[in-house]
Image 1 (cartoon, rainbow, N blue to C red):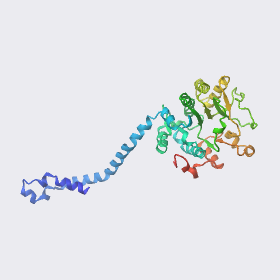
Image 2 (cartoon, rainbow, N blue to C red):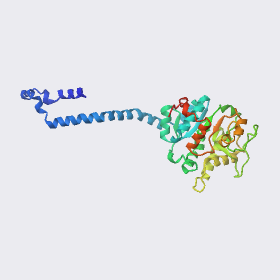
Image 3 (tube, one colour):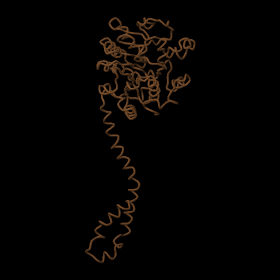
Image 4 (cartoon, one colour):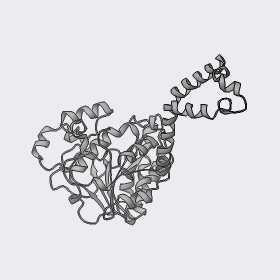
Length: 351
């Protein structure tokens, strides 16, 4: 700063002009008290604001291109980057779910499938955070919903959030990819891909807590009391077949026929079950083994069954319980909340 002021004083016409010897003999007389006060004030202002100016300049020079880049990142580009051997693993996440995303990713990393994971971000905060830590592994599919209302199970925001799931999956299979969908309140204990036997169109898991025999049928279960099966919409594998596309389109149609209402707080799962049941005669469906893919209502509540099936569990779903706090505590109680001690195993690191 002093060198800058020194250069400015040299260039000052009052000090370098040779036109007046009387001026050169009395240089200080030209600096009145008012001038000195102005210079002092200028130095204070520059001293206070120059660090902030530098910070703002850094923000705009660094983050603007990054924001612009991911803002225009398309699903087609993301799939081309992430998919391995024509297969992608996807989840849909809003910002409050980031700790669960990280927990899920640690478990997938242990099975060496993390590089085929694509996070469908439901808000820009998630899009930028994931791609900042793990470039190219998050994409946002417009429109952006109100993420603040999407947390509470049974709310209209939650319905709007989950109702986009079949649209995302339909886009992916229409682009020619195999896709596994998971909710992020899941933990992988083993590699699920060996269980995707054959070339069926749609693979899914039963959400019932009734214990099935180990050699149970892989057909769609019969309808229950509500006139439909009770299949979980949180773990699905699709091949890019006409049958899989038909189920997704029917799921979308069923959701449109059963919109959320305050009196009947719908979610996406009943519509998925209606879609499966109504297309079962045209589509090759496959129910995954219960022992490998148990619902949370069975795994966390039937200790005898867990002991009898020890070593068979592949993906554990933390459902049949509501709220972040309760889900986190349950995972901790069962040694499945991995982010406390193993966050660095996640591609996102410690959030």
